[in-house]
Length: 443
Image 1 (cartoon, rainbow, N blue to C red):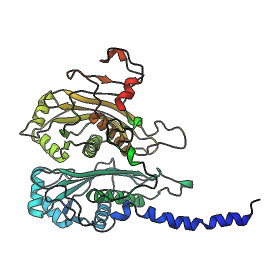
Image 2: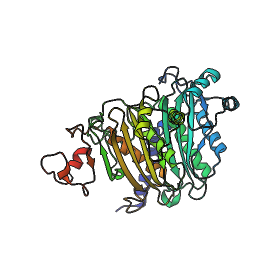
Image 3: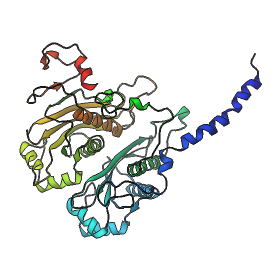
Image 4: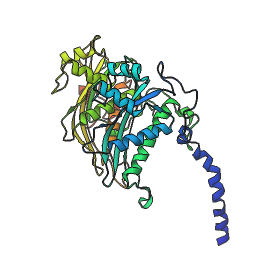
């Protein structure tokens, strides 16, 4: 027979258990990233180190309405200062902008990047875009930020983004739900500034409480646990193709053009461009051009692309005397809705290769936040930012995965889901059961 005292003795061990587990939970990434950046952080480029001077540009507003830009700018600046980064004085930066009539704050070109380094002594410039902002219930905020080196050839050093909604993690009885936009802004700033600090000095020995065995963490192609090859099947495009002309082991130089904006939401094409720049930079070994350089190049040739870049414009963009890239990514955004109940993103993209002048990759993607959500909001996506991020990531993985199943490099093979595909049209001499080729491609 169980008595009350036996149960009370068991609960008496609860504080002891909490004290034993607490040190494991407090030695996480946020604890190691607070305060000044530690000494010994590795250098990324020549002259770029943890004690660099950063020119923090005002935020570019890509949202569909008004937003407290100065408040967000000040909050992000304070968050970076707390992480130990040195920011250029705002007055000196504004004087520089007036001198060179610098109106565009969504990127930088070679001339301005070199002038900043020579006149202001800055090592890098931080460019931040506000993708979405909403104060009404539920509050939302999405930010995309990147650090670009100053000099005659500006390069992306770091790029990351954050998209939050107040109702995405309500917890038990809505106790963790965020009702105020100010608190949501603090959370977004802390994560974004922490990501930049973590890039210069990753936390050593920060393992989760329940970790995956090291024997499972391999980089072999097709391994399920490999981050490079693990695909989120939920965000697969419903129609795509990839040419065997693409070499997964080659380090291409790629220019991501602003996508053609066909959505009701304005500036959705620029938002899609930044998401693809982020995923290409973080997931591949490609040299991704700074979007400011791409914009400056398009303005110089006065490119008008109502239906996307023509072959003549592509030849000019990829020429050595101009941008000198190997691949050009472009696309169209058909729909972009950032509603908390059911966000929607619909776009198509294509990549043209320099030498062959052919489309070597293309995809058509449409996803919603409530797709494959059956009970208790499990798997639900609350922001268009998260939706577009996952869609761009899967397309980049499909571009760079080493499938090794095509024999004729001059042929294009259009891949479709198993319920649409006719296996007789593939190069295989014998019919393949439905799902066999599909599984072989991804795993």
